[in-house]
Amino acid sequence: MWQEISRFGKKLVEYGLVESHFGNISIRTGDTMLITRSGSALDEIDQDAVVEVGIGSSSSMDLIASSETIVHRAIYQNTSALAIIHAHCPYAVIESLIADSPIVPVDSEGVYFLHEIPVVTGGIGTSDLAENAAPLLREHKGVIIRGHGTIAVGMILEEAYVVTSQIEHCCQVKYHVDLFNRVSECEKGGR
Image (cartoon, one colour):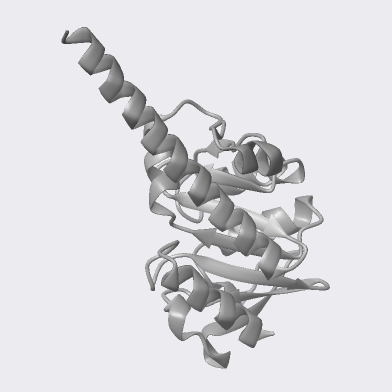
């Protein structure tokens, strides 16, 4: 299974959805999850870069697992998700800082597939973030952490990856449409 995590780690970095050493990926396997180690380069994941930790409670392996393990654990405990991707998508981060919450896509695919994208708060790897994100992921495919990044869920990693890339695409389109509208308003005001 680490090979599947590695495949999507490379895709995330290749398409600019995350910087190499930031973000994390997990897969649920019964009562445990396989999750990337803290500080792992997502485009260089091998068997040693993935650890197994329990979903029901923490263990000593949490010390080397991703700093977001507590968030992944809460999502698995509160949703039917079997895969999670946390990325630092640039336009999603920008939109989370300037747009109202939730973010409503303006492109047709975003409206159809995502409807709206909740924006949550909470520090990196904190119980606040876990408590704010997990309940929303019962009804939404993804959320954006204000000023931090995205969390996307799926039944397989490919689904979580598609949601991640869809959120970023929606935010990129929205950013440019909003920018165009602001510039147009300024130009009209200057005449």
